[in-house]
Length: 578
Image 1: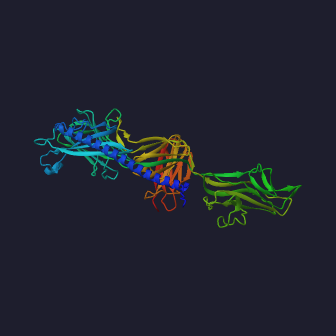
Image 2: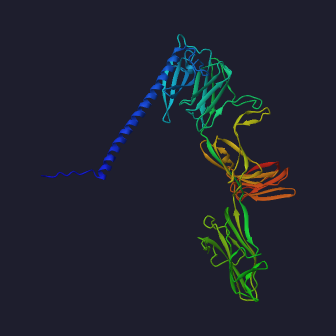
Image 3: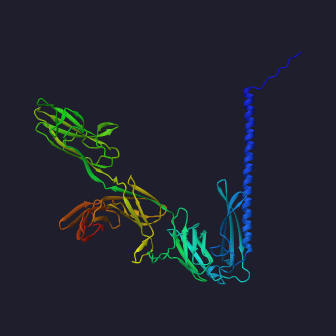
C-alpha cells in the first residue's frame, strides 16, 4: 500500500501570494477612486450647467429694456455676481451684458442707421472649485429688441489700452464706475485682441471713473478733481448722448530696480613708523629701536645681513594697488633692498618679475609703483626689507614705510532716499505738477534696496543726510518696461552748498580723467573726473561767481564763468574735440 505525502505552503509561497493579492487590491482601489472622482466631477459640472441654464432663462424672461446688470453698461435688473450652494458645493454665477454693433448695417461711424446698439450679447459664467482647480461653464446668447433699434438715449464709451510703445494690450482689466448715474455704474470687463473695450449704451453723465490693470503690469486711471489736484490728468470721463467718448490708457510690464549707496573710491595707506615691532611678522638679524628698523646690535656690533617682513595688508574693499614708499638712512657701506610679496596659499612669496619688474632682485629706490599688480589675483601683499652693512659699526635705518592703495567703493548702509518719477497726474493750485510716483525708501544694512514692481518712467534720486557726489550714468534713471536696473549712487557727507560737475563729449558720452578747476576769490579746487565723467566739490558757499574750467588732451578747454552755487547744484559741461 502506497503512502501519500502532502507538502504544506512555505513562507515564500505565503509572501508571494499576499503580494499578488495586494497588487490586485491596489489596482481595484485605484479604479474605484478614479470612478468616484469622475462621478464627482460629472456631478459638479452638471450642477454648474444647471445653474447657468437657470440664470440664462431668467435673463431672457425679463424685458429687453431691463436686460442689463446692476451698475453695468447697459444698466438693468440682473445681479452681476452671486454665489449659490448646490449639493454642498459653492458656485459663483457672473452675468455680463454688452451692446453689439451688428456689421450688417455698418460698423461704428459707417452704420447706416446711425445707431450702433443693435442688440445685446449675454454671457453667463458659473465657476466652481474642483480639487483646487477652478472650473467653469459658460453660456452665451443674443437678445434683439422688438421693433426699431434704439440707443435708448445713451452714448458710447471706448477705452483703449496700449503699452509703452503704443501697441495694444489685450486681456487688460477695465473697471468703469460712476456714482452719479441712477442706478450707479460699476462694471468690470477686459480688453480683446485689439486692446480696447467698447461699451455702447452708457448713460449720459459726467464722472466716469476708469481704472485699468493687468497682472504684472503697471496701472492707469482717471483722477478726482479736488483741492489738491485742481487739474487732474486724466480727469474722469463724460459720456454725451449719441456720441463716442474715447480715452487711451498706457500700461506695461513692471520692472525691478536696485538702489545701491557707496562711499567713493579713496586713496588710503597702511604704514609702520616702528614705534614697536607689532607690525613685523618675520625678523632675522633686525630689530625695532628708537623709532627705526635697524640691523641687530649686540654689544655695539651690528649684524652684517638681516631682513624684516611686514604683516599682511589685505584690504576689504581693495580697488587698486598704488605705491610703496619708505623713508630711510643709508650710511656709506650700507644697502637696503625692498621686495613685495604676495600670499601664495598662506605662504608669503616674492612677486615674480612678470608681475612687478625688478622685484626678484629687489629695489634700492624708496618708491615702487604697484599700480600694475592685478587685485583680482593678488589681494594680499607684504613688504620685505633686506639690510646689509660692510661696517659693523654702522647700520642702515628705515624710519617708516607705507603701502598705498585705492579702497572702495564701500557700501553705506541705511541711507534714506526718494525716487520721484516724471509722470504727472495733474497740477496743484500753484500750477506745480503732481507726480504719479514718489517712492520713499532706504538702503539696508548691506547698502542696497531692491524695489520690485516699479513702473516705467524717468526718475530722479535724492538722498537724506548725504550729497550725491557721483551717479554713474544718470541715464540709469530712465526705467524701461520689463527690465532689471541698478542705480549706483556715490555719496559724500551733506554740504549746505555743493557742486557736481558732469563732463560729456559731443556725442553725450562721459569724459574720464578730465581736469576740472573751480575758482573764485579765496577758493581754488582742482579735481579729475571719474569713469562716469563726474567730480564733486563740497563745502562751498552760496555765491554766483564760481568759474569752472574743464580741460583734457584732445579737447578744446571749456571755461564757464560766474556760475551760481546754491544748495546741491549740478552742472554739465560739453567738450568738443580739438
